[in-house]
Picture 1: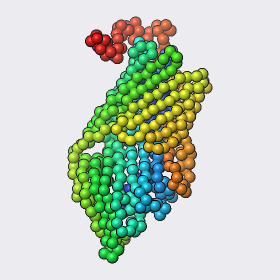
Picture 2: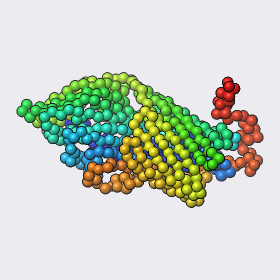
Picture 3: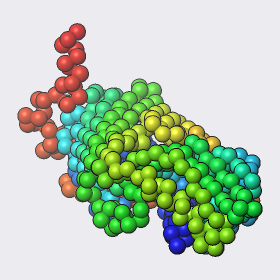
Amino acid sequence: MRYSMIKRYFLLSLLILLSGTQIKAQQYGLFNTRTLFDAFENPAQKAFVLDSSRKYASNFFLPYFGLNAAHKGDANYTLSSLIHDGTYDTRGLPIGTGNRNQLTESSNIYLFSFRIFQSHKFHKELGFSWQVRSDTYADYTNESLVLFDDFRRFSDSQMGVLNGNGNAQSYHQFSINYRENYNKRLAFGVKLSLLSGITYNKIDITRSDISIDPALDQISAGLTGTYRASFLKGDEISSKTFFPDFKNPGLSVGFGTTYTAKSGVFIMGSIKDLGFIRWNNNAHDFSVNDVATASLINSYETGELGDKLTDIFENADRRKGFYTATNAKADFLISRRYAFYTPSFILSKNLFYKGGDAVLVNNFRYNDLSLSLSPAYNLNGFMQLGLQGMYQTPNFEFFMGTDNLLKSATIAKKFTDNTGYTGASFYMGLGIKFGYVVEHPQNSSYMPGVGDEADQEKGFFSKIFSVFKKKK
């Protein structure tokens, strides 16, 4: 039965989203740490230290990764039962109340990163990276879950019970990152990326209704909305889908700056991943405005209603290419070091999609060890507490942490109520520097960019800003 196949696919999707395998792009505890991750995420940030670091840095295909997903709403218990027991239980979900559920997830895996210290003059650094990213947001009703379990709970006619919206996008990102000092206090950086789309889904149901007539042995479900996706049926996805083939190409750019005041205050700002993906002409882009009518008995026994709802989408299907925006962010950080303690205040806001964070990172450092506590407020209504531990020398770094300590600690427990929200988060990474030490010119007989033609040249950003000075 197609209905049972739809149900299994739907349950599997929810399980994957909330089983703790999703990855959070913003590991705020790593901001202003000068790790390899920090340097690639914040384009103007340094990764090398003069007289200490070696010339090259890489993660050697040992992925930087993290886990973060959150869900808020009455469906917490239903999803908890699905994760822990493998059962799909909606008996405790109230219907007819208008209550809604929200799910958020984002991911950012650095599969490979490689960075080069180019020149002492202007402290030039050049980096290359390969990432896999994803972003998900869903807003849906309790009734949307009950429909897949026991639609006999519905009675008479109910309007708007299936209204909701959601989007999910994943893609490969191949980037070149360049940064340099403009002067002793000011630095600029840029990150240019070539994208290859993996999957995209967006659904927006604006009108819906369910009508049940036991006397006529009839159930009807009406849907009005739009659907846009890179695939409609499961057989359109294969293992090849997840490899970069640039059939869905895109571009993005990121740029940022850092400034260190005489007082020691450090300021960093950046625009990240401002770009688009062009999904090819085999993608699906269509509107739905139809009613599925089926037998009550047959729908319960054979899934007839599910088959009819599937027919609505298949009959409306239109193949068409389209463009989507990447989840660009604007980040701002201000920080100052006090001996072993460094507080950092961070504001991060999604530019095109819902969401953002306000974070206070409290970093405590002793020799090569550091510990960070990061309370954060997510604009989707979540409060989080991050915890991070790091061992970092000039040529080696290893970190492990979570953006959501309390929820991650309780995710192994089965929830017995629907208060608050569920969530899980974990991230870790490793970076190694190798080659000769990038010593200061006064301590070395040779230094790249010193004593040769490069020593007489202006920096890239100095050349750009000099053009504006001449015009004046």
